[in-house]
Length: 138
Image 1 (cartoon, rainbow, N blue to C red):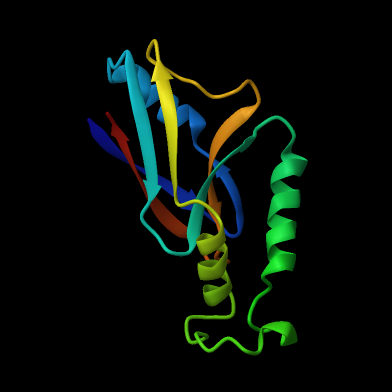
Image 2: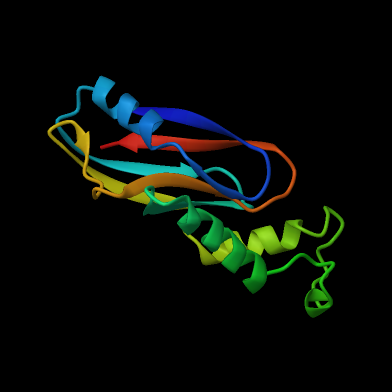
């Protein structure tokens, strides 16, 4: 069984879509399975991260922005892939450092996430996008 989630983004940051995934899993009638999620883009990532304190999300965004700044930063002058904007190649670098797929066990028809864990799309580009995430239950 599979589906596709579309997540609208409005700039860099973490966008939680745990509820959408949990709702789909509960409707799937799968008692035990392994859920695989994969983002179909090369400038976004997927994370399982804390969903209680929003400062965790803003701190992660700030850290990765500092780790890999836009190509307009003099420290990034060595990059050559710049024709799609100053955030494009840094977005590809971030996506290569972070996961683009996740696996989550399903037991008794429920996601086996920890108490404070959520599923996030991590948008690395500054422009709004509609990101697609494929979900497969096996």
